[in-house]
Image (cartoon, rainbow, N blue to C red; front, side):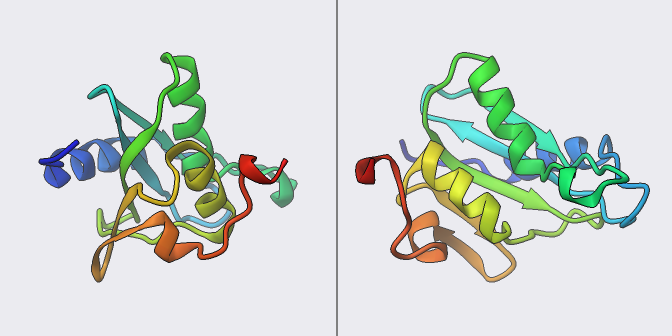
Length: 128
């Protein structure tokens, strides 16, 4: 797939960020992903008083991906409270590897990169 509309992905991510539940960190995060079939899925962070149970925005996006029919992610835009690109954390990089593979494009503050560049040597289904 070519011609990723990063502006639209970021706009959807910002909309998701505005729905985040972040009463503890006060750090809302939103994410949007382009699926290989053209769908756009999204998610936001959902915190919990038991901090370890907090769900990153990418968790919600992957749930939306599966709920809406599955498929592979080809591009992802994650944003902070100001709508600026935010690089996914390590846990979320693993989620993106599982559902998009190393070639999945990711928007960062420094431009676009791949999941493979963000998570070299990733552990995946091929190891099972």
